[in-house]
Amino acid sequence: MSDTLETATLNTIFQQCRQCGTCCRQYRKITLEQSEVDFIKKMGGHVGIDLSLREIREKGINRAREEAAATGKTFMIHPDGRGCVFLQKKNDKHYCKIYHYRPRSCQGFRCNMADNSMMSLIGGDAYLLLGQNSYGLPLTEK
Image (cartoon, rainbow, N blue to C red; front, side, top):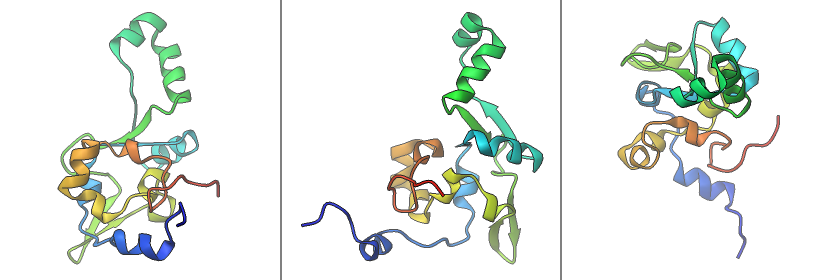
């Protein structure tokens, strides 16, 4: 028996997008790769860095910010309950305004990840999905 799953098998496990907008409203922070940060800011998205007060106190704000960014602690955040700023609704369906340029974390998301079972596993932080493709396997460079 093979150690890898067949694509056909994986396609039966993961659902296609229903355009319900649940994923874009539910998750409050999405991990960004350094190459995505400037684009998200330019397009009007909110970007934040995960820092603790201890880190700021010990290292200073500038050094702590640089180290956090270097270790992948940069996020696109949704500061309110409305969800992602790039989410738009037309004819009772939700669309991403930057769909073809969305962060890699978003690219790896599938609808069945928005149900309660997935939420209990990752606790509302999609950054745990970073580095995975649509089947939960490691991403390869483009």
